[in-house]
Length: 157
Image (cartoon, rainbow, N blue to C red; front, side, top):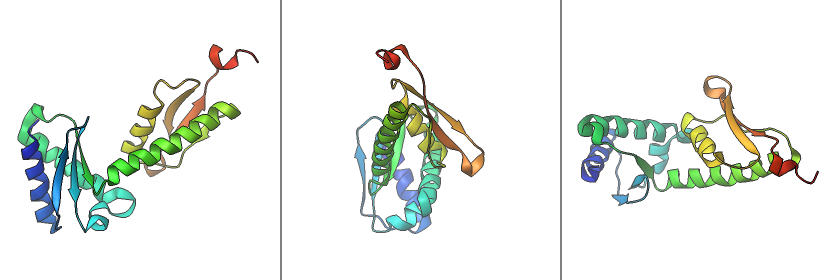
């Protein structure tokens, strides 16, 4: 993956949008994170992250065209918005998964973006006693954490 070309794409798009930034930090994590540090984070993130999602999508599409199949997985972050979002979802899902197991009931989350739903499904993948599924349509689509009976969680009852 050509990190410099992706960073250049981010710089160009920020320039077209007229958004000033301090720097773009490249963190060699999995996936690679390009963290934009800016004093205009509110403008770049937008209400409920909608502008951020569109910006990230554009960066991935433009980088994909320029790099072809070499693109790889990467995340564009703005002042750690993405990292904080993932951590907040992780904490919430941990609590709600435990609630589903404890009370042996399904727990429905609030409507989420497709990417946020993917994060929930990934976090819950392989968790004992629960499974996840998405339900609903359009902006009302949400994740349901379902309790499932297993020998492990019914033993000793």
